[in-house]
Image 1: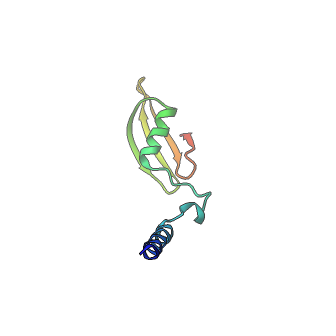
Image 2 (image 1 turned 60 degrees about the vertical axis):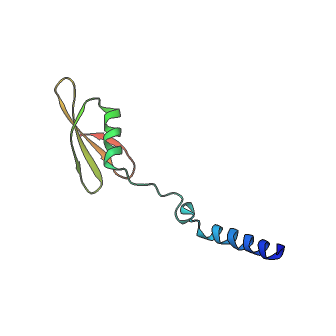
Image 3 (image 1 turned 90 degrees about the vertical axis):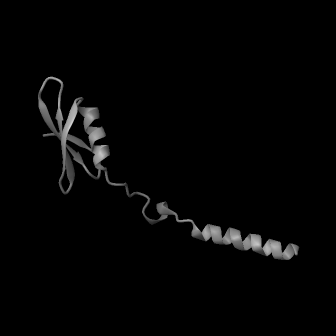
Amino acid sequence: MRILLSLTFIACTSFASFSQVDTTATNPTAKAEVSKKKAVILAKKTINGKTLKISEQTDFYTVRILKSDGHVVDLHINKKTGEVKKD
C-alpha cells in the first residue's frame, strides 16, 4: 500500500511539473507591446490635461490632450518602447 501511494505521489508531482509553462525560456528579452490604456497613462504623465482622442498607427499611438489653458497637444507614444514625443 505504501509503495502504491508513493508511486502515485511521484506521478502526480511529475505531471504537475510538466504542465507548467515557462514563458521566460522562449524569449526573456521580449517586452509586451504598450496598450492604448498604458499609452494614455504615459501621455498624461508628460502633459496634464483631458484626453480627447487616441488613434493607432503601425508603430505608435497618437494621444490628443486638451490642457487646462485651452491648448491641444498631440503626443506620439512608441508601441514597443513607450517613448513619448511631442508632435
